[in-house]
Image (cartoon, rainbow, N blue to C red):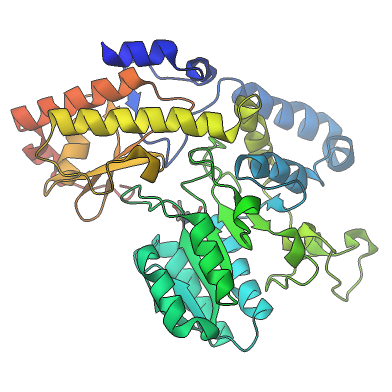
Length: 406
Ligand SMILES: *Cc1c(COP(=O)(O)O)cnc(C)c1O
C-alpha cells in the first residue's frame, strides 16, 4: 500500500515508462547492467542501417561521429557536475583508470605515493598495481574514512588519492568534496571512480574541485552492454595532463597524419583510438531518457527508493544485516544485506523473478535504478525475499552450481 502511494506522488515516476520492463520480472540489477530504454533499438537501427549502411564513411562528418566522444561526454558530464569540455567517452573504465593513474603521477613528479581503498573494485586495484610498477609508485591502502589520517601523516609524499564515491559492495558513499579538499591540502590530486555514482547520486565534480574522474556507462546510465566509459579532466589540468596511451584521436591535428605526437590542447587528449561507435551512439540515445531531469531530481528519487528498500528490509528480513549504512543519504544506488547463504538467496530470488546479484563472499546486492525501478518493485522483492527464507528455497541443492558471471 505504502509503495503504491509513494509511486503515485513521486515526481519522476513517469520515467519508468521509458524503459522495457520484461513481464513478470523485478529487475534489481540496473547497477550492473542498466535496463533497455524503449527507443534505443530504433536509434541503434538507424545508426546501423542508415548511417553505416547508406552514408558509410561520410558519416564520420555528416553524423558527427568524430566529435561524438566530446558531445556524449558533455551529456554525461552534466550528470556529474561537470561544465562542458571536461569529459570524453570512448574506452572502458579500466583503460580510462590506467590513463588517469599514470597521468596523475606525471602531474606530481617527486611524489611517489598513491592512496587507494584496499576494498575497491578489483580492476581499479589491478590497474593501479601495474601503473605503480611502471611509474615506481607506492600504493598506500586506506579506507575512505582513514584517508585524512594517512594524509596528515604522509601527505607530502602523496601524488594521488584514488577512491570510489560509492562502494560497489555495500553501497556506502563517501564525501567527495571533503576528501578532495583533504587531498588538495596535502598537495595531492584526487581521482574519483564514479562507476556506481553516475545516474544515482548528485556528485558535483566541479563543485568539489575534483581533478580526475572516470565512470561506467552501462550501469545506471543504461548505455548497454560494453557501452564505452567516460573520463573527466578538470579544465585547469588539460594543458598539462600527459596520459600514457597517446593515440591518434588525441592528437592536435589527427588528419595531418604527423608522425610526431602533439596532443590536443583540451580534454580531447584523453582520446586514444577509434571508439566503439555503435555502442557509443547507443549510449547517446539512452541519455535522452534523462534529458529533462536534473541530477538533484534524480538523486531525490534514488533516495526515496533506497530509503524505502532499507525500511522494508529491516521490517521484513531483520535477520539479514545491512552491509552498509541505513541512512539513504549515505547510500548510492544499491543496498546489500549479508547472508551466509547469499548465493542461494540470490538464485532463489531469481527463480521467483526477482533479479539482484551476489557479491563474494556473503552479499545479496539489490540495485535501485532510479529512473526504471518503482517502490512497488522493491516491495515485491522484499516480500519474495521473506518467502524464500521462510520456505528454505535458498538451500535448494539446484543452486549449488555457479556460472561464470555472478
Ligand atoms: C563496474 C566497475 C568497473 C568496471 O570496469 P570495466 O572496465 O567497465 O570492466 C570498474 N570500477 C568500478 C568501481 C566498477 O564498479
